[in-house]
Image 1 (tube, rainbow, N blue to C red):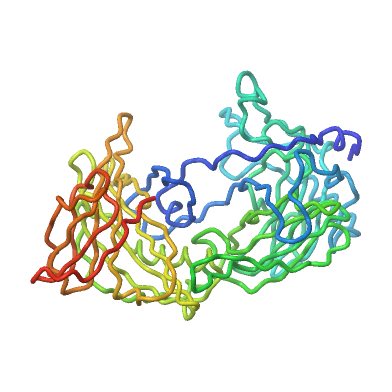
Image 2: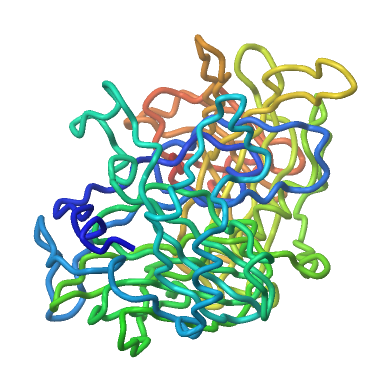
Length: 487
């Protein structure tokens, strides 16, 4: 490996990675979004099982430390991550290291002859950064020359949002079973440009294996999961991995639900007293034996048929997503499905809504609701209908009133997803059985009134300026007032 080449590839001002690409609808359900709106997505209705894709790297975030250390300055101290000798428990197995460095980077199914872009650095430019045994497997991190850099206008540093795309280096993870020979190692991630001087990671929730590769001397800390307090505040505790060479190999408790959502695990790296990176690790979905444990949520209302038939089991996917994100087991969270049924869609097309709550050990309650709408009908027996989906609400609230007794009031904006998109905004009220009606408070006015059905459900076009909803009994007695949740 040409160490000078590697060092020349470092850039002191690493930009944050750009936003992830649009995903399938199942992936929307499988990953938590903190943006104001979830992206419009698509799926094939005929799929019975969720597709688990190899995760693309997530953007790093600069953070402010919670102790006497400070957030990183515009340029963090320069350090050598990729040019130092191979690290890991197999670093001294020279035959293994050399053979792994020669493996093809071309993803399965890629056809170079068809002109498909792919990243496969010349062998002479490669260097095995890490090779070692981890929980239930063998992993290796390889870097090489970035042979797929953008050209033309997309290569303008002022326009390119993915700093890795402009890097002279690229990296990829290879994974294999315990004791794997080099020829048994397969791509665990898609190859991509290496962001200058920033750590690389890989995590497998099914086995609990986590590897973080930073620079020698860097301090690597790991947070197993977020802690949700009774007042709905979320904090994290970090533990020093005590790595001496900048590589942390950690065996965590397996979480069978991780393939469904964003991993609960975070790590942060400190260099020369500066906390300059904190992020979720890149994920690898290893083969699993058997299905995850059954979630068996409590249904407060019987699911209603959604026409046209949307994919089933969305509530199970949502629950698995939450368990993945918060690192909890089914016996630690009480899931209640408040509604599965029709929702006014855009463009005159019917839509569907799934709303559930998750009560954490502290008593705090997470409310999450997803919508789904058919965008295009099936084009034949070999292709299913195409659906779009998004999130109406994703909100934590403090412990207090039991989730089953709460009134949920939320705004759902259903997007058509077409070239000239339409939006249908609906106020959804899900009240306990026995509430007779409701009215909306909007800037002091109470001119929007509507009845709730026998199951406590009410839906109306979203009133402009609506802030809260008052629900009442048949005799007009006010029983509750709740703020409207809006993404």
